[in-house]
Image 1 (cartoon, rainbow, N blue to C red):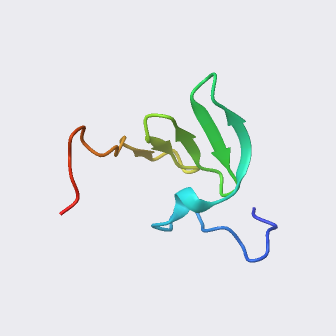
Image 2: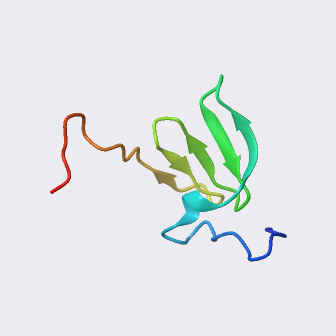
Image 3: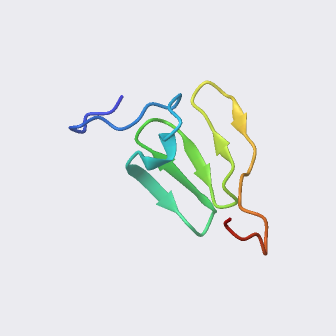
Length: 65
């Protein structure tokens, strides 16, 4: 799917969110990445094969140790 050099991470990669944007619709709360992943503003994801990744925002008030 990806024509970039170097290629974007695949939808199955742990770093899939670093793929390039193809479409960005902040007014609707979603973006389409080059690898086919729909990324939602709540940090949830819909993968090209239909799997859903639950939102994974850091908890409010959480601090790094």
